[in-house]
Image (cartoon, rainbow, N blue to C red; front, side, top):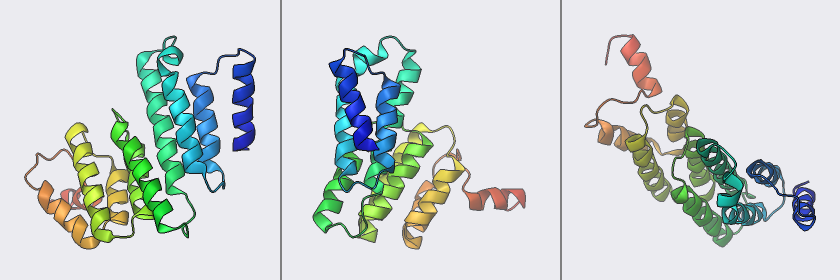
Length: 195
């Protein structure tokens, strides 16, 4: 299906039909959900095509909507990275993680979905739990610095993918920050008057 969708995009461009940002997002959605072994690389190539045309494609749209579609597209590529075959060779897993990390670092305003997807990429692609904890910690601190409030699903994702010790260290590190977050544990404790 993804390859067929890509052929349709090529036909559109050959016939002078102008694809939209939504066209590229739809194509990325196809690549994200396919079982193709090189889907992450193919999705990244589509994202690059979209970014090359971004200024032109976004010129007729509300700026915030165009940025939202770009972030969604980047998140879909990270998602495609998450879903490579678990028995892929280590070098393929490492390159795929580097691709996910590169795309994640390019995103100007990641959403909580972006963070959750990136955390899952860390979990699926990094075998070393200490490296995984450090990558997730760094990403979370970026999120924490920019978010008004941490989304509960981000807390759940962190707890699911970090080691218990890494999670405890992160919570200790956050003790000095202003409380702009509620971990699921703190919500329960606050409701019982403990925090």
